[in-house]
Length: 187
View (spheres, one colour):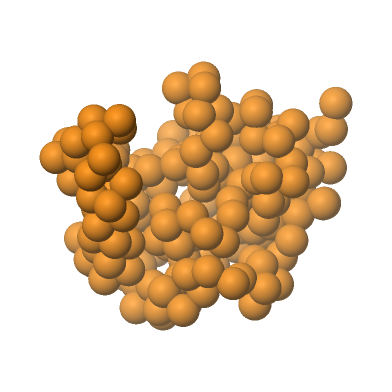
């Protein structure tokens, strides 16, 4: 079985992944540019730096959740000196299948935080809890999947979600807080 250190070594550097994106690239870059970390969190990031973490990100460029979550992670990574590598989900199901959501779903992104020895220290993803609530609320109005309106209405819901993920700073802050909480539990 491939170790997390080996997966990290196979990963694509974040800048290379972003430059190769075909979907959501502009939105991801815009979020990365417009989201900022609170100066009040300086001590938190100083403590994180001492832990010498690295991150493996299971993702795909078409994923709306990744579009919002990755730039926030990259801002955190910059503040905490966390080297980040991207692994494409669809080409690496053997890794993805070790990090299924609810034991069944290949939901992304998944952030695997490892130490310098390649030991898993924390896992985050695919969504912050309050972002999940927001998405479920929007999806709750959809008709049944066998309803002829389902596909068209689902497309509209996805448009709303993508727009909110691209523009809503309160959602970005939920992601930030959730990732920060996960990282804060690492000893």
